[in-house]
Length: 77
Image 1: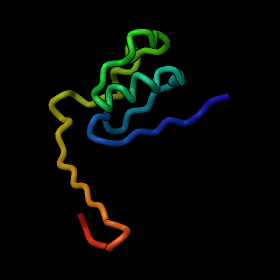
Image 2 (image 1 turned 60 degrees about the horizontal axis):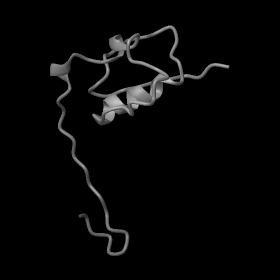
Image 3 (image 1 turned 90 degrees about the horizontal axis):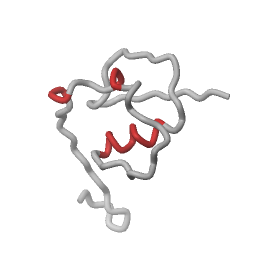
Image 4 (image 1 turned 180 degrees about the vertical axis):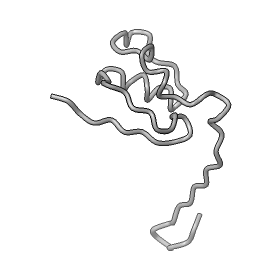
């Protein structure tokens, strides 16, 4: 069984296609996106074969704007 993995955002290279991705590698991809250190006991999976997925370090800055609406009053917070 195979799945589809699609990613888009400032951390990912554009127009990159890879042949396959192991499901256990997704944990390490998520850790890199969230900028957290992977659990040292999570030894399954690796980013070693997936470095082409990520954009160069200098190209990861983007401006992000968050808005939220208070559902009680309908006001923007």
